[in-house]
Image 1 (cartoon, rainbow, N blue to C red):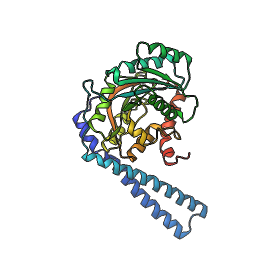
Image 2 (image 1 turned 120 degrees about the horizontal axis):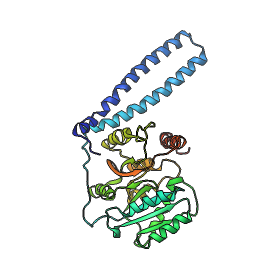
Image 3 (image 1 turned 135 degrees about the vertical axis):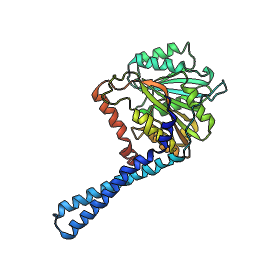
Length: 334
C-alpha cells in the first residue's frame, strides 16, 4: 500500500494527538483526588464507599501512567526516519526455512498456502518449506510427500507431543529443520495456514535483514480477501496495520504480528525459542528479542493475503486472544 508524503509527515506527529486526551485525563484525576480528599476530611461519605472510591482512583492512576508511557514512546517518532521499501536482488541471498503452521484447517486452504510458499521469487537452493502439522492429518502428509517429489525443498513434520500452542509447534519445526541436510537456515519465516504470500514476499522482508545485521525480526502487514463489502466488524483492521503498528515501528518497536514474519536464527536462539507459556507468542517473542538487543521492523506492505473468521463466535475468539496480550505479558504465570 502506497502511503502519501503528507501521511508520512502526519505520522510523526501522532504522539501529539495521543498526548491531548492524556493531559485531559491527568487534569480529571487531579480534580478527582482533590474531591476525595475533601470528602475524607469532612467525613461526608461512609467509610466503605470512600475506600472503594480511593481504590478506583488508584487503579485509574496506574492506567493513566501506562498511557503516558506509551505517549513517551510515540514521541520518538518525531525524529524517526521513514523506512524505505526494499527488494533483495540476485541469487546471493540468505538461506530461509519457511514454516507453515497447520492445526486442522481445511486441506484445500493449506494446499494453496504451501503452493504459494513454494512459488515465491527465491532460489530453491536457498529455500525450504516445512509444513508443521499439529493436526497430524494423514491426507495432508501424503499430499506433501507426493508434492515433494516435484519440490525436493518441501518437508512435512508433526510433533509427537502437544503443548505450548502455536509456539510449541514452531519450536518443534525449528528443531526439525536443524536435522535436515545443511542444518538450520540463517533465517526462519512463518506463515499461517490460511495466509497466501505474494511472490515478492521473501525478497522484501529479507532485504531489511541484509541491510542491517542487528535486525532480528521483520513482519509485514496482513491483508484479507474474504471481508464483506461493508466490513461490519472492522475485520480489515486498517487502524492497526496503517496507524498503530506503523507508529510503533517509527518508534523502534515493530512487532511480529503472527504471519508473514521472518526472524534471524540467532535471535530465536538468544530468546530460547518461542515462548510456550503464552498465547501471543508472536508479540511476546518480539519483546524478548528487543530485550536481547535486536531491532524489530514492521513494513506496511501488502505481501500476504489471508482469511478472517467467518462466524461471529470465531471473530470474538480471535479478538479475545489479541486483547489478552497485555495481561499475559505482565503476568507470565497466568
